[in-house]
Each structure stands twice: as structure tokens, then as C-alpha cells.
Length: 210
Image 1 (cartoon, rainbow, N blue to C red):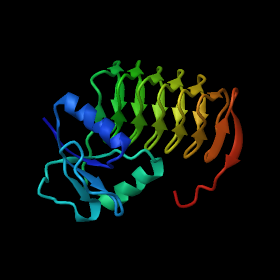
Image 2: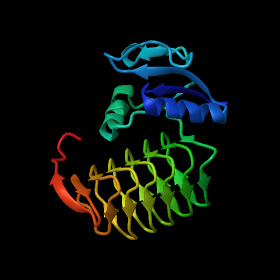
Image 3: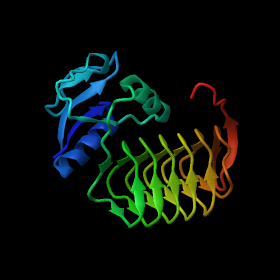
Image 4: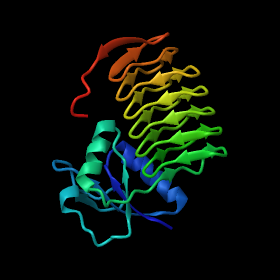
């Protein structure tokens, strides 16, 4: 049994709690940023992250925050010595030669075939299908029902909306956004937002300060 502190007390935090309870792990507390309510959640205490109790020094963190760059910022808040748990729901079907980095969250029924890399603090939501030779970068998010064909690369911090489909060999650039239901058949530039079938860019944001 592992001991875990969940950073974030919203919907994703409750999903992570549910997965950890199925796994039999012990959740010590939720940690929240200033301005959020501190009432217990399902009997588990809620603490301000700046006032966190380090009594549970053996507990590892899970960054259960849905915003990708917020997870990146939280790693800076917690510091270089923080240790992170990896959450893999037992309903996930994960084939051989799949590498999953520390802090990744694989929630519910997910299918991964083989020769796949999942980055640090990435979020793979229920119903995702990830085919051979794919790479999902650090802090990236795949919404529910996303499908990645073979040899797809999702770079750091990219966010794919519900039901998005990415064709074989496509690269989705760092900190880009793919709209819900989009079908991506061409590479997506870093920082771009693409929507539609086939997906086309609508805006590109500056990458400074990410």
C-alpha cells in the first residue's frame, strides 16, 4: 500500500481518489492553493499547499489538476525534492514495452498496445486508445475518448479535447490545443489551436513564460 497526497480537490482529484482506493492505496490529504475551501472531502482532510503538514514524509504527490501548465507550476512550488506517485487504474489495459513516467495519471478504461512512452505528470482520461510507437510528453493531457494511431507524438503540455483523433505519424506540438472531436491529419505547430474535421488552426499563442 502506498501513501499519497493529492494536489487538487476538484473533479480530477476525486477521480484520482477513486482510482487510488480501488488500488488499495492510502490517501493522506488533499492539498489546495489559497482561496479554495478547506472542508474535508469524503472524510479526507484538505490543507493549504503552503501550510502542508510534512508529518507524512513517506507520502508521494499526485498533481490532480486538469490545467497542464498549472501542473508544471506546481512542480516548481513543491520543489526538486518532491516525489510523485504514478496512478494507473486497474481497468486500464496496458501492453508490453510501455514506459510510464512518475506522476502520470491513467484514469479508468484506457487501452495501450506496445512500445509507448507516457511522460511525467501527463493525464490520460477514460476511453483513450493509444496505438504502437506513440509518445505522450510531460504535462500533456488526452481528454476522454481520444484515439492516437501509430507513431503519433504528443509533445509537452499539449491538450487534446474529448474524442479527438490523431492520424498515424502526426506530431502535435508543445503546448498546443486540439479541439473536441477534431481529426488531426497534419502536424500541429507548437502553441497552435486546431479544430474541425480535418483539423485546421484558428489561433496560435506565444510560448513565453510557459
